[in-house]
Image (cartoon, rainbow, N blue to C red):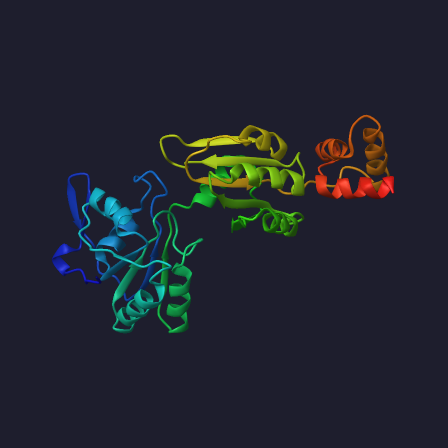
Length: 297
């Protein structure tokens, strides 16, 4: 149920001190919330959550934990992919009436891999102010902790769950001259790393960033080939961000690659030769295998 917050309820608490939230101008406020550690919240975000007329969130139970931590009495209601049409229309109605609407996701920055982008688009099209309240971001936290180049990077969300579609998507991104950032499920990270090592090249540097800002935060760094072996059939828990370094310069001329393939084929099966050549050149194993088959033909 949607309810507006009364003026006397618009306070938040820092330690034992209760503070009044300053009035907000009308518009849609996109408020970043912590991705794990509840201390990663900004003062501006707290004031916005406490002062908004209406507070929308993905899951009221998750947001309630944050609100209770900081003594915020605003009553959140759910806005998610299953009720976006109905709830979105009502939120737009509040905006039309000149109200302040705050939107949060379960964790991190709204509109990044969540259904809130629909509401943002509709609000902009209707001429309402859209105000970002920046804060915690899992892709950026992973990027700065991974130790990979960050002068150019691309956030690519979740990869497809089907193997062929996943590999096709990786192939599309293979030559992007930037560090790649993905969200991934702990149940699929082994398959994703194997596919990435195959398509992008086993010696491409990467980092698996798990449980960011939480008690068991972990950064595991290495080449894609090394990480694929490390996570093969491993029991993994927690939320994961996968960061993959940009492609390096071509390390060999075509004639050298052909010679390498033919040399390796003398000592091992074709599939193994392609895998070893991938490690040495940074080229995709599948591409090298096709090339080897052509040479044999």
